[in-house]
Amino acid sequence: MFELVQSLSLPSLLAVLFLALVAASEAGHRLGARHDGPRDKEAGTIATAAFALLALLIAFTYSMALMRYDMRRAVVLDEANALRNAARLAPLLPDDDGAAIVNDLRRALDLALGLGVPYDPAKFDADVAESATVSARMWGHLGAAVAAQPGSLPATRMSQALTALDDAVERRTTALRNHVPMTIYGILAGTALVAMGFAGYGAGAAGANRRASAAVMALLLSCVITVTLDLQRPDRGTVEIPLTPLQDIRGALPPLP
Image (cartoon, rainbow, N blue to C red; front, side, top):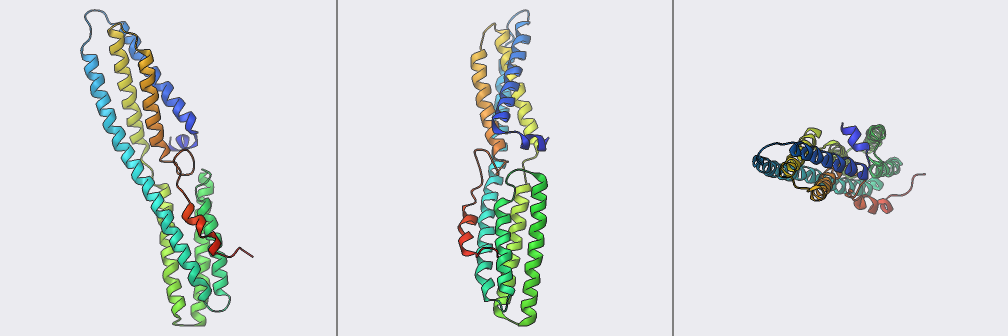
């Protein structure tokens, strides 16, 4: 289900939700229209309670999604700072090891800029694996530098910088994989369908035609839920994670040979 939702475009998500909510309202309206006898006064009460519960769920889900979005923004800055610090220290290493590490940092930056963009699980896993390979290669060059000059202060500081970079890369990878469980979204969508169904039932039982207002409400709910889902997809949509901190340090690194 997660892969299906991630693969859909934003207009498609909006359209699916809108049509489902309108259908739920129409089904409830038709069932209410078949009601014989006195007006069912409980339908409106149940609809009000369902919408109150829906509002609570929307606030809860949006808060969870926004927290993850903020975390993804923060780890981009952490990774950019770690790359910049490593790039400043690498030229201080002896012989050719510093230049080799700088070249690997350039590749690490390219991988960081393309991580998760565009959405492709296979590409994401491949980029993560290559990041680990690049990291291992940099540690190998650093080991050679330490062997050439034991106790070197630049090598010690470079070791700390690479450790910080590895930690930042792992935090960002984890943040990109950390999503609000689809079960939460399923409960949210189900509650919205039930609320719209009871609202339509109440209108049908009262003999009132409120399809236009139901459509407006369905559109509003669809937009809110879609935006909440969009926070889960930092690689595309209307709410993307800015990569400006990573782009700003490209000039500090020499190009690959």
